[in-house]
Image (cartoon, rainbow over all chains, first blue to last red):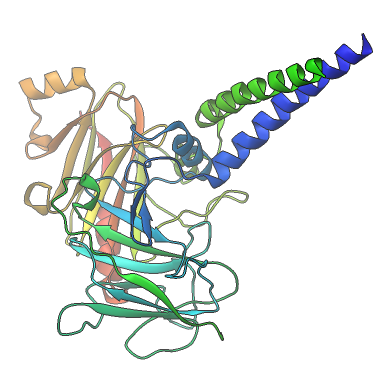
Length: 194
Length: 181
């Protein structure tokens, strides 16, 4: 008798504990299905639309975000460098290459909750495509570093992980037509001595 | 042993059910969603600047640092909403969201008529009326049919550098969101 009660209790604890914990974990950590990955960059074209999956909806409801619509733009996130290691705010990185079709784009470094880092001291918190220096062939290099760099310098600050956010505005990239040139810049680590 | 295995199996199946129920119920019971964030800014039928920092205990808004935004919530049960704005900025865009924060329509300055921010959000029934007799105020408006009652709009504008700040500010201040009589 007592054994049966004990077994029922175990089942209940697993059901409610496990269910709640896994739901909490999924909602706070999992970005939802339908991610669009190109190289090191990931976007969620369906986030915040009626077509997004229940996990993305639950997450959006807890974050209170209102993501960009399809004609506004699409944000791409890079979490790792070319070697697959997480981006660190103390390290210097090189974002090099070309960008996909868009009217313009912005690039900024953010913490893990995607809030832009503010480097302070009147340093620009973000770069945009109309301001950067380019090479003869139109490609660009943005140096992401806590220390001053020549050329295009995106200043970072603080410790811990960071995410690079490249938002394309007025872009056909998310529309899945297959006609768009999907060239994204690569994020390469230069050094990690601060 | 068999009984223990059965209890564990029941537990796991139950965990799956609880997991699904919690995930599906979160959007209906969350008090930290986009609607509550925008309600905290002030009254309906009025544009308010979007702040990056929210109320204590909520996540800051992930808004592009080179952008400024204004938001207005409305209820089109009785009358359609008329959204206008005057000014030139390097780029602006507007999104219409349902009360649950789902983006149902978006438009940017290039896809708008003559680069002007002028749109009307109406329910399907109101749209029939609008197509019969269009009020003079909404003559050149983009008409958007939305099967919603409450919703909100967010206007975003690009600020390439500080020299654009005044112009973008005056554009966002000029935005208005009123019931279309």
